[in-house]
Length: 358
Image 1: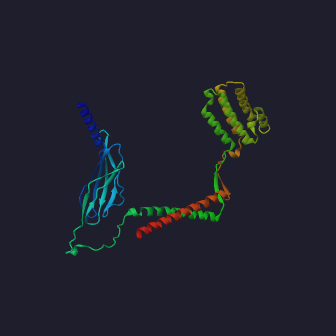
Image 2: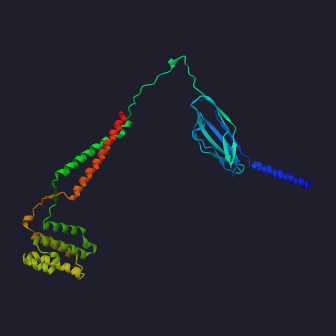
Image 3: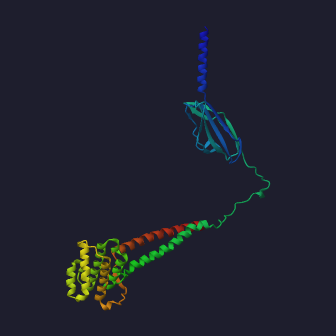
């Protein structure tokens, strides 16, 4: 018998816990029950239910009841309670009214798992502004249209476009003139004069002397540069290609032109250079200096007298070219782009002026 009582008691507790777990409460409240016309109030709707349940709030559009308008509907706020076994959902509406009256807000329905639950009814009193009709002089008529104060900020865009428009217009006019005249392009190029052969050769020998390659244990490089300078001088001075000839061929050719005394020292220079290049001959220090002096003496003895004091003057060459198709296409494209930019700029300036003075 006692066991039956215990079993019945347990069943009752289980039923009570299920009912408590499935209980749903819906509560509605307003933060202010009295407002002025046009003033706003907050209507809050709260639903407490199990975490596994799903609630559907009423879908209001513009009004809750005729006369009470919805200004804004906030996003629902969800809070979990009792170790996430329960949850509290809060939905907030911002409401207002523009007619003075006492408004009745009926219970708000909320559907939870297919079952409708309702809140308690609410009331909202809307007051109109008191007007003293006995003193009409306190009212003022419609004010005249006021002129907006001057502000530089309104003119920044207009001024910037104006400064841009003038250079674009000048460039457009220049392009149009260039494409209409179709004159050839005249260019003047200044050509630096070429030094006389003996001056160029002496400069090169001076460079070789200052570098002192033979003192660095490089006699082959020294004699190669020295003989190349002499070969270049002979080519420019006597008119035959000494750079492509052997030492003996150069000497034979020079003997046909000059006297033997002027060429004897040069012959010794070429012979020493050939020994250094092909026989790995290591000349003495005074021998290197003597060959350098021989090269200078040969140049001074064979240079043209009229070139000794000659100071070459730079020459200026005038080149006349017809305007190419590429230049014409460039000018035409430039004219089109500049025209489009100017049209857009003037349209913008016109719209800005219209907005400022309209």
